[in-house]
Length: 294
Image (tube, rainbow, N blue to C red; front, side):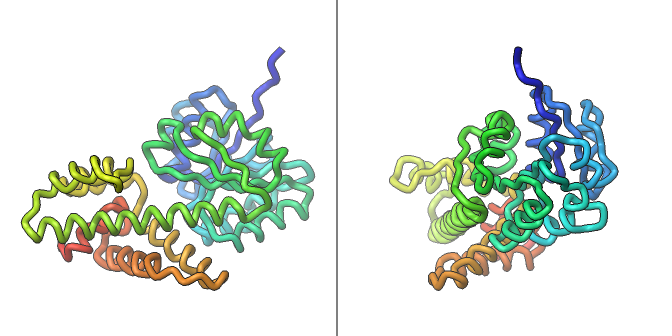
């Protein structure tokens, strides 16, 4: 006889969280959700998800709670706030945080969970809206390995590969490295398109040649044509990429590693936010690189 599926809680229903929670619901899990903006729960509620009144109530009700918030401040607010996650943690409660935050936030939240007898796993993901909708994320877990194994059936629905990276903090470090490199490569593509087009090359020719060269990548193949078309519908909001670049540069400062490319890339994304592009896809950095104003 197959074991019963655990009851699942999901906190944070932004672009990524709503996609992941939706996949768990479609897979037949008993799902309870919470979001600080109640209206974001409506679509999943219409499909059968239950809605909790607070993070505390969600934790008390569910076997495993997942969270996906946008930055360290929101992660701490949902966790430490009044009727937050911590208020519902009792011995044996299981909390999996899929937010992209810095190591300090991971350790602070993880310590608070374990001090109350709870079980903690960090599991940030590599991937954006499309992979989240299609279950093709890469999951970067660290912390309690037994909880990782217990959560693996959920991870198999959400992603194509799950890594276990040791003690708490390993997942955050890996995610910042990956997103740092992704941001650098995006700005490199933006600068290549900008200078190439201004020098008289056809943008689509640049993208085609990239596909057949040593620098070909799935991101370039996907984002390049959208950038040429001016289609910046957000799959990964630019403001979140800039946050990750900032956290990566801070990590470099902490370990004494110079990151000149990451620092310059961070400035490019900051310029895009100043241009009002923060809620668009992070590929919108191309317009700021070109100094295009809307």
